[in-house]
Image 1 (cartoon, one colour):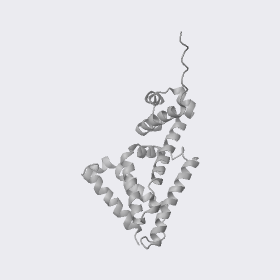
Image 2 (cartoon, helix red, strand yellow):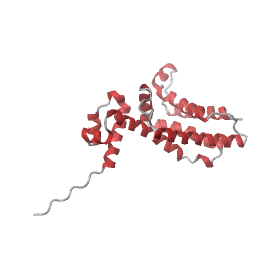
Image 3 (tube, helix red, strand yellow):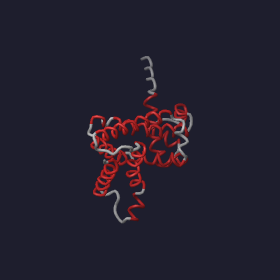
Image 4 (cartoon, helix red, strand yellow):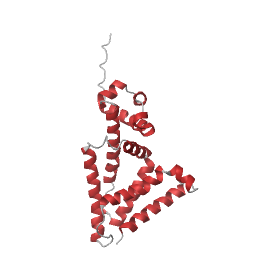
Length: 211
């Protein structure tokens, strides 16, 4: 009789990753209160006990998902290597990236909407969010500084205000695409409409900072 084969140790990292992926979809679709832990367990091939073991409770799992969503976009922005580009090209690349990221990651927008409904209470104590956000603001500040030094940008632009505007002109368009399509009688998500909107966003930001 062959000896019983030793059971493989559980890959806790992979299990947590599956749980977070399933939770991201569930929270993005239904919000914190509408999401079901049973559904997250089913989609992640885990069980509720394992979810609570790793994340404590449903609210903590939601906090982790929202925090990770912000960390992901901030990490992607850092990979753009904007420090070595002409400041105008760097700013245009950032606007293009933000727009493309929103289109490719619709769950990010719905998670942000959901957290705002809760007055950002899950992120208030997050030092991670503060750290990655400071890095992003510093990156934008460097672009502005280089633009001012080269005579391309006007001085005195607040990098936080600029980031809010870059985010808003893409965010609002996409979150209001259904009502907007009725109000303005055009298909907001048609390929030509998306291209037109991106061009408008780039032109708006570059005009805003131009010396």
